[in-house]
Length: 75
Image 1 (tube, rainbow, N blue to C red):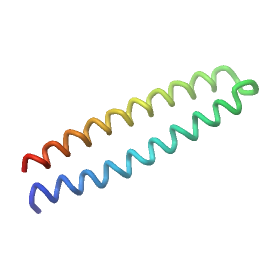
Image 2: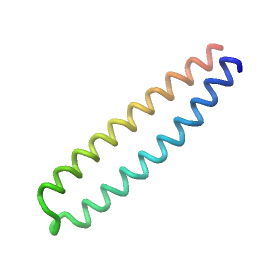
Image 3: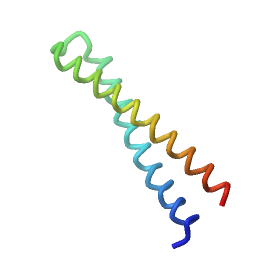
Image 4: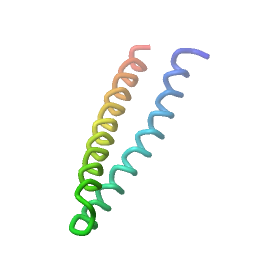
């Protein structure tokens, strides 16, 4: 497998992981907004921590994708 094809495969997997993480992130944000007044404070804090982690993870995946795209341009 050439390096170009390997990078394309990595980009395909990263698209899937990015899509799943953003979907979960948006769903969790929507749930937190809807349930804000009625849920336990501990669950609320844990939810915000998870949302923060998923958001940071999505940004990091995005940075990796851009690095791979630049590497693909140079090949």
